[in-house]
Image 1 (tube, rainbow, N blue to C red):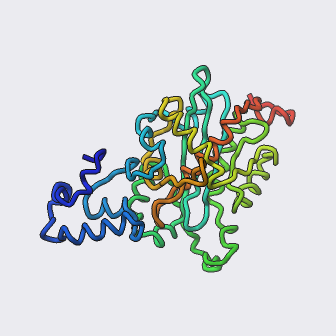
Image 2: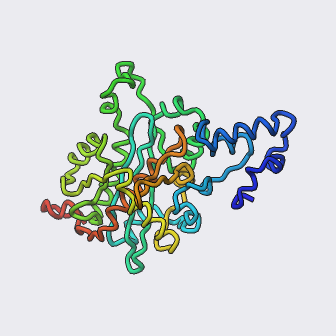
Image 3: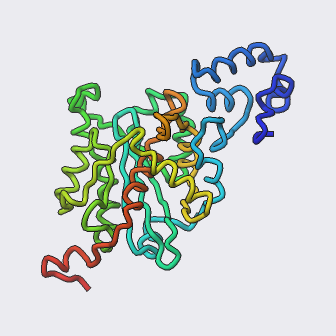
Length: 316
C-alpha cells in the first residue's frame, strides 16, 4: 500500500485513521493533504504521520533522493567508530550544520580492507534550543537521543550568554568537542589521509577548524566542499553504490529520518541538489555524508602511523 501510494486516496483514509468521520472528516484531510503536496504546510511527512498514522520513512515522495529506495537494503548494524577503525584501510570524514537551529552532523566513511566496500557511520549533535524552536519534531529528536545516534547539548544556565547574539555559537562548544574527539580517534589510528581527510561546508566552520588545529590537524587535511549542485556527483554516485550494495551504513533511525526528510531537485541540464522537504526537516547528517563521499571518490590513501610516533614518543 505504501509503495503504491494507496494511502493518499480519500477512499483509503479510514484504513490508517479509523477516526475518520468522528474526530476528523475526509474533506478536511483531503484539502490539507493537497496543501502539503504543494509544499504550503508543515511538511508532508509530519502531516501523514499526524493525521493518517503513516510513517513512510525513506519512501516519502516521488522527488526523494534516488538512493532512498535502496537505503534500507544496505544496513550493517555492526558498524561503529571502533568497527570502522578495525575493518578499514582508510577513513574520511564529512561535517555539516552546527547552527543553533540545526543538527551538527558527522559522517565517517571507511574503505573496507579486501572488499573495498564503503562503510558509513554517522552521528549528530543538537542544542536543547532546537527542541523549543521546532516542537513539531521534538518527539522524533527524543527518539534519536534514546537510540544513541543524536547527542542533546544543554544550553548553559549562565545568563550572560545571549543565544540570539551573532557570536553566541563561539561560546557553545560541546557539540564541536564531540566531533573533534571522534576525529582524533581516527587520526591517531593512522587512517586519515595526509590531505583532504575532512570535508566541510565552507560556511560556518571556523570554530571546528580552530578546535581541530589545537589537536595538531594540518590545513591540508581540511577540504572545503562546494554545496548545492556541486554535490551532484556524490548524490548520484552514492545512490548507485547503495543499489549495488557496495556501500553499507549503520542503519540508524536518525539517518533513515534524514533520508526521508530530503528531496532532490534538478539544477541545470544534469546537476541535482538535495534540499529539505520542509522547514522543520533536518538533513545535516545526510549532507555530511555527501561531503565525505566527495573525498572518498578521490581514492585516498591512509597516512599511517600514530601521531606520537612522529614526535619521538611511542606509547606501547
